[in-house]
Image 1: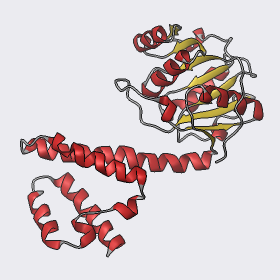
Image 2 (image 1 turned 90 degrees about the vertical axis):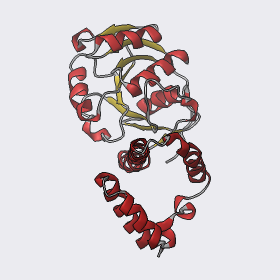
Image 3 (image 1 turned 180 degrees about the vertical axis):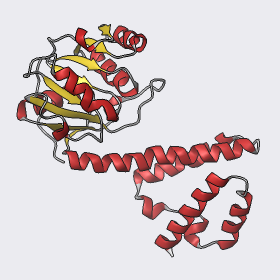
Length: 267
């Protein structure tokens, strides 16, 4: 993945979607001085809230979409990205840029819907209730042509210090790794928290451990920082843990799976 030269272009945006990713991106662009002309969402309530934050207007019908923008950023669930773009393409001129913000939809799935198509993918997990420093988030760009690439890079440069070209194959690999390292890890923590809650133990006692684990991951390589009974072959502790998990089938299954994999890797 290679860094591209920055460019400066006057850009206007229409945002399609009002969910977690959309809320952070469109608000961030508006704060950065980009003219966000309109927010579309099937949920007019969330569209109005986001439009107010962007000093924009809100609609809940695609037929009411503003056709004067230079870029249409589509930030909707992965499984409806292509259908939404297909509908959008029937309403706007073919020389407009249409780009989506998802990790799993390849460029060739949308490149027939406009002369200028692209991907504007922020590699991060987003929640509306969380404040985000967009400046630290990698933005991965793919485009059908040089003009689209320059515009999407200009938009991303307004938000982030790390903007890279990334093709569809690379982005899908990153998306898999992101799910494993974020969504799966979050599920493991949720399972551990539930276990402690059940035993009336404050799960936030794990917080320093989680911070140190993340710090080691960021500064090192996970394979080199692995610890625990499975790595050192401590069967007594492993069996004790499994006995404690007799009434927690889901957590016991996870414990079995990871212990087996760690033994295979380190012993």
